[in-house]
Image 1 (cartoon, rainbow, N blue to C red):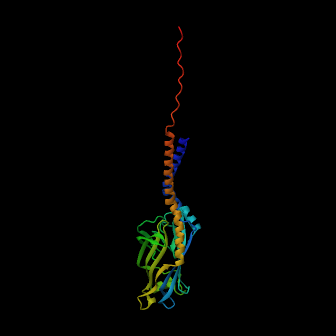
Image 2 (tube, rainbow, N blue to C red):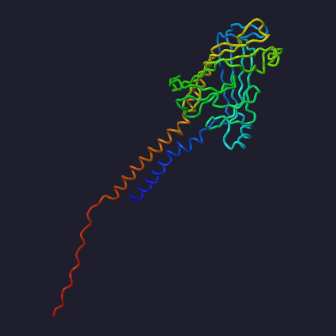
Image 3 (tube, one colour):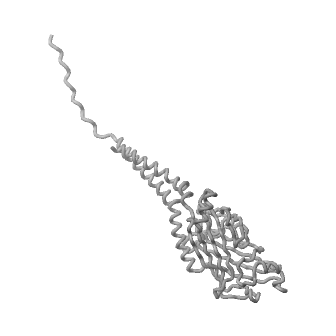
Length: 332
C-alpha cells in the first residue's frame, strides 16, 4: 500500500516539476497580453507655462496648460487586423486634447496606435496614423514590454513622427513601487502644424503659405514598473516655436508653448493603484505559480521517497516453521 502511494506522489511530483517551466516559458508569453477593449485616461498639467495667443500672435505667461490624454481600445478594428496579421493585435485610438487655463482648446491631436498584444511591438496596418497623417512606427509608444529590461529602448515621438532611443537611467522607488527610470531627448526638430487650430482663420495651409515653420524639442521622462511595463508617472519639459516667414514680421522666432508638463496628483494615485493590481497578475504567471509548482514538486518527491523507504524497511522476523517428523524406518 505504501509503495502504491509513493508512486502516486512521484507522478504528481513529476507533473508539478514539469508545470513550473511550462507556466513561465509557455503559458506566460501566450496569456499575458493587453486586452483589446482597454480604456485609460490621464490628465497632465504645465503650471506657469508660456503659451501663444494666436489672435495677437504674441506669447504670454499663463497659470496652467492642461493636457488630457485618452487611450481607447478599438475592438472592431483589432479583430479585422488580426485576420490578416495572424496574431493578437491591439488598436488604441488615442487623443491628446490641450486647453489653456480658461478651458479653451489650444489643439487636439488624434492617433491610432496598432501593436502586438503580447510584445507591444508595432504592427503596421491601414489606419496607423498621427493627426490624420499615415505613419509607420518603429519602437514602442505609451507602454513598455512585460518584464521590462534595464536597457535602452526605441521610442516613437508622435509630434516629430520619428523614433529615437529612450535611455535607461537607473532603478528608483516611486510611491512604494520599484520602477525603472527612462529619459529621452528630442533635439530641435521641424514638425507639422496641428490639423485643428484654435483660430478658424489660421490653418496649416495658410501658415505654410507664409513660409513660417514649427519647431519642437522635449525631454521626456518615464518611471516604468518593470513587471507590467506600465509607466506609473511621466513628465515632459517641452518647447514649441514658430520660425521664419512673413507671419512673424521682423521676429526670427515666437514661442508656441514652453512648460514642464507633469501628471496630475489624482491620476498619479489611480495609476499606481492600477499598476499594483496588474503586477500581481503578471507575477502569478512569472513567479508565484512557477516557484510554487517547483516547491510543491520537491515536497511531493521527498514524501514519495520517504514512503518508498518505509515500504522497504524489514519487519519483525517470521516465526520458525515446525519441522515435520521424519519417517521412521520399517521394522525388518
